[in-house]
Length: 81
Image 1 (tube, helix red, strand yellow):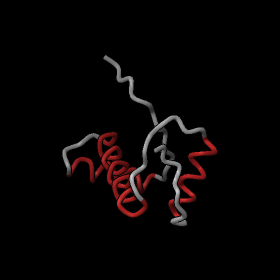
Image 2 (cartoon, one colour):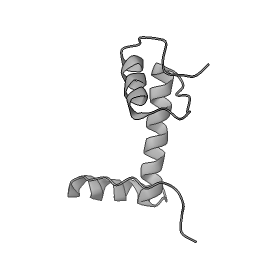
Image 3 (cartoon, helix red, strand yellow):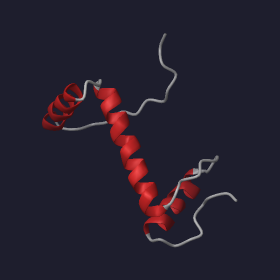
């Protein structure tokens, strides 16, 4: 059964592709799962530094402003209370 998860396309050079394939194989993961793990780790690190990202139906402008506010540490963030 095909996945219904959203798809992210990434463009990178051949060297990065070979390296991520090597890392995925070392970790006994598919390349897709390895990249998913990288994304999850990056999100966790971002949230540790700038605060939890509350998910609600933000429009693109709200998302951009929320990220900018978190990076500049200018509360309140776009979180709904």
